[in-house]
Length: 428
Image (tube, rainbow, N blue to C red; front, side, top):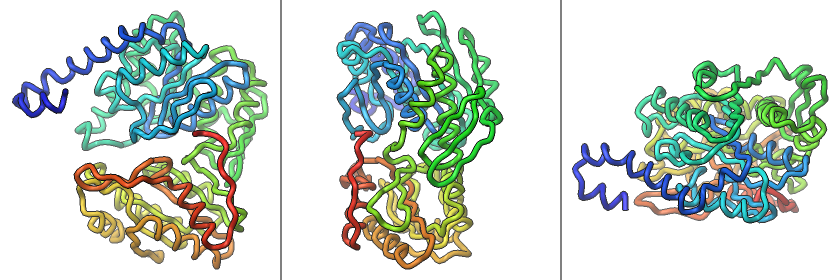
């Protein structure tokens, strides 16, 4: 309907009525499904990075405490024991979908719902008429600038989600904020919420490597079996929220320890090969650096995507420079070119690589195969496949798409060079 209106209404008039259209749909969707969020403990999670991992840590914590949970986010749509992979290539689907999902969660006997909330979703009022009990703000860095027009507009979209929490009908409205982020004070200034902060200094005796992390938190030992400081940070965000929801620390520790796989988020591909193979979304310079830092003791063979056509073009040379700093060998490959020429995209990235060996292999499967073959002959190698995570498609021109599952492709290519793979057991 919106696309039809866009074709027949003058652009200035369309821009004026578009917000009312989205708001009305949000309201109608909530009415249609009976405002289901009022019957659940609803926790939103927003931020540039860490939403998905924080959601998974929190889901495991709540489950360890006996809660029946629903999760709506980038990876999957989970309602109690029913778990479906998110094939929509959007973290936060439309308003009717979300309200229907929450109604199904209520009907399934769920007590808690976790929803990843995005700036694009906020632009279209998808968070409106969802009565949240809590919102976790993880961090903010430049992202989707072409879409929003400026970093300030992007931040404003995120802040509008916090204001939605402030308008919630729930009695106690918790805003869990990463105090280390430059935008923390703006979020904490939200009216109608109880602001609670978490920060790196709270993780005493922090240890993190390519396989696990551990720290002391409120004099309790927390240990997780995912790599890097960034995962410790996400675990802390989930733990802080759980603590404010009166969940015992024993359940917090058990839930974090039970989170041993998050698909597409530093996902370890185990085919009994003698070198790590990791699939990670890593869509910002900060997240790429954090992943490479976690594997700093290895000789990194990087398969690096083109960061998506038509968006955030400023990131391309920056991501390439980071790979040039950390990697032993770089393979530039296709990611989601949309209507841009993929050769031009990766060529612009290659210009920023001046130190390390680099090659362009646009066929992403072939690029992965090349990286794995190289790793066989390099001691202490680690193959890091970044940019796609669990994205279900490679998006091409004029809306075309190719079915894709990065982890599955990695397993298939490892199988071709003689390794036997395990199949993941969680995260749809």
